[in-house]
Image (cartoon, rainbow, N blue to C red; front, side, top):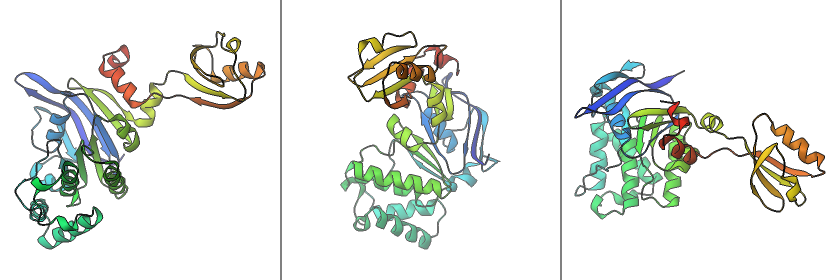
Length: 309
């Protein structure tokens, strides 16, 4: 595995309380990695350790295979915090130029990169505006540009779509995919589970400072599936067709059923049952849980959650 970032047994305490409690994970180069958890779970503390704002009390962080060094590695990181950090009274163009140079770009390279991003995001007329004159959505676009303008290899985005209309949200989403395809590694932190399903390759879920889930999006959904299937028929389904020990009926309408197959039986058993009843099946699809359903299940502390702790 070509890991850009590896975090091993990180711990961080505040006033004797564990904000981050023995968390480990690794992120492959070019992946979009989802960091999930409820408020107070430890996500922000974790991100601040990865960026060198906080130092871990225990554990190690490795970037590009080397122990993390804030002075050396920060120019290779772009961090967009949930609490935006732009100077409201400063002109936008001067601000982006200043921040790009802080990350190690020459003035000319910074100007070239800024021009490219401003054209891409239709911000060419913004140079002499001030941040305080921007709407929340426009400010969000500007914050994204300041995060990526220096071409970082690790991009950390905390709620990047907050305040954006669908058009601009899609614009930034497309850029996230493009940056990942070009080799950037992206940590994406959000409460919006539908965005995670659409964008992320891999996720971890933290709660009360602990990691309780770690895996690819597809594998996580497979791990939490509950043997539920949606079945479509070319004719009406009668009540007699649903009174069967093979499955429990979840939902029914005229020509569709949603069933949970009982233990000891397979989807093939159910197919053979309906075929034997003379029904013509037009569709047969397993229903996988959404990440939102899995998130709620785990955070509520069910037995399934405890097995990951």
